[in-house]
Image (tube, rainbow over all chains, first blue to last red; front, top):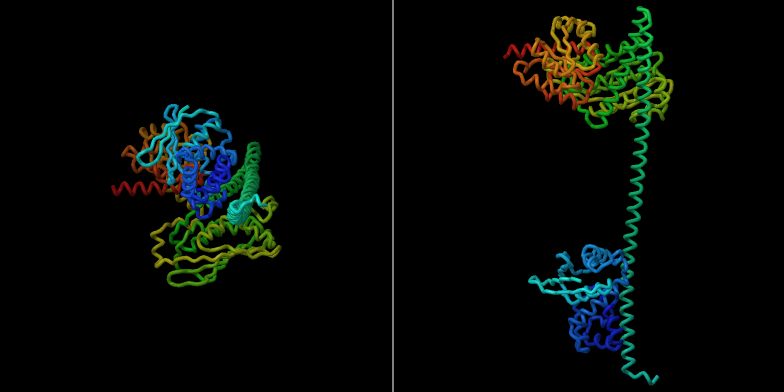
Amino acid sequence: MLGRIFTEFFTLVETEFGDDMLDDIIEDANLPNEGAYTAVGNYDYLELIRLVTALSERTHLGVPDLVKVFGTFIFERLILIYPKFTENMNDSFTFLSSIDNVIHVEVKKLYPNASLPKFHTYFQDDTLVMIYQSAKNLPDLAEGLIIGAGKYFNESLIIQRQLLEDGSTEFRITH
Amino acid sequence: MTAFDNNDEIKWRKRLNRERAARQTAEQLLEEKSRELYLLNLDLEKQVKQRTQELNTALVKAETAVKVKADFLANMSHEIRTPMNAIIGLSLLGMDAPGDKQYDYLRNIANASESLLVILNDILDFSKIESGNVKLELDYFDLKDVIENITMLFQQEVQRKGLTFNIMQSSHLNVLLKGDALKLKQILINLLNNSAKFTQKGFVNLEISLISQNEKEIQLQFSVKDSGIGMNEEQQKKLFQSFSQADTSISRRFGGSGLGLVISQRFVELMGGKITCKSAPNLGSEFCFTLTFDVAESRKSLEASTSSLSNKTLAQRLAEAAESLKNVRVLLVEDTPLSQQVASQFLRNAKLHVTVADNGKEALELIEEGTFDVILMDVQMPVMDGFEATKHIRENPKFLYLPIIAMSAGVTLDEQEKCQQVGMSDFIAKPINPIQMLEKIAENIIIHYQVQQIL
């Protein structure tokens, strides 16, 4: 997983729960590099799961909720770092439809080794159907990102989520 | 300082270590990345440089080609206009001239027309070479016939300029060679004419020497030597380049398409040789090439192959052809009045009976009514063209073997092949050479009778 995701997670924990909380969950998670992440590196995503689990234990908040909040947060941050990706885009559906074929193509150029999730999208009338598929299987993170997109474009999105037989997750998104 | 207890210090130290470790990892990664970028950049720079160079070369090449072709066109235009000027001017003069003067005008018009044809043929040959459409036609031939033929064609030019012409052969060859006799003839005539063009007085000689010989192969060196104006090294370098005479001002003085040597060089290369040139200003020039020919096992092969290189004079051939064609009935299918006049008068002069049809449809009607021994068929005509008409004629079993000879100004291989496909028996190129026309008619009529006898 891209180091950027880890450093952004640290920023979220620091701002929402304080520096000490970050120290504590790094300690709890028992990480191989003792939490020395850099945005330009690449790390095992299970380390992030360990960090979130530790945060959940200390804050008594559910892991899914925490991951979702993180997804929303990271969307805002990524847009700030890479404003190019929302250039000329006026709504969340356009943006979400462009992740696979536009945004991830560019990300691959910057990070050739990154293993990225798939977001297959299509329309059914007014509904945007989005199939999320990832070896890391973090549907909560994906949902958080969709919520983040809605917030960014000032739209209130209704998101229905369903686990499919093959293990992927289907999101049905309407206004 | 007591405000900091031990736990705090451990905590700060940990954070510091964490940040330092992260920074060092980041620095290492960034360094690797910038090294990668640097190398990539080097490669890109190299590629850009190479591509730019390639593009530049291509551009220069394209520009040169365009310029050369433009110069060529301008030059050709000049070369075509010169004889055209003579033809038009002399025709106008001839109309008002008294009878005895008229013959002179007409003779000069015919000469100018011949030069025009030479230029057009050069251009055609050259474009065939350029498009890679030239193939060797290998057959057995007697070098003696080639030499006699050349002598006949070249003698006139030599006499006109008051030059001497000698053929020197190191030894007499009593074998048949396998090769493209027509192209060999064309090469030698080109070189001889070229020498004659640049020689004001003295000689033009053709020397043929035996280099080596065994049972299967024979190696001959051909050399054309003159006592002409010669060339400096600079001029010699440009000699075999397309569209380039040693100096464009030379073509102004001496005329010619500037393609003769290029064509000859390509033909020689096709035969596995190379023309080289030795020359110096005012000391004449020598053009030389060596070719290897397969040798025929016996002289009989020649009888089996063609005897197109006859050593009879033109007048003899014309008389012979005309004699055998007396009273032959010809249907001439031709839409242009001038072409009708030219062809029908040639035929009538040779005592043939001529009926003229203006197009293919009229021809179909006429052959139903009359009896014809041969049809001369123009290809491009209004109402119904020659291809269409031939197809219709061949549908009637009665006319399955009737000689139909195409007569066309379209002299490309494509057009000739198409004529063959629709069932035409032979092909005559315009402008019409009357002797060739009569010979072809005779040949086809003989074949026709032979076929009928077999059937």
